[in-house]
Length: 136
Image: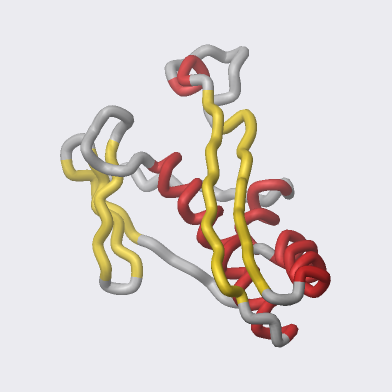
């Protein structure tokens, strides 16, 4: 088992996140900073692309080129309190271009990568989430 962590501090209308001694600023929609939703999408995209790279290396396949795009659709009315609309993403779509010299092996690598990607799994499988509030 591996445990991943991040820490955050609210600074006005943004949050300073610290991961591995590196700070990131996450902001509200409309700010100059990436939103939590954009960071989630970036994490999901990079996770799938890095999983492809990892699985390809396991199989001895050299990835010559890979570019990706991801988008998620969210109805802001859910975040604004409408009880009939979920506050989170309604759907997420990936589009990834991959080039390798062995297309048959590449197809197997892509299929296995999609199955093994930790964040794709997390987004598609119901998981237990715990929130512990400490009022100070």
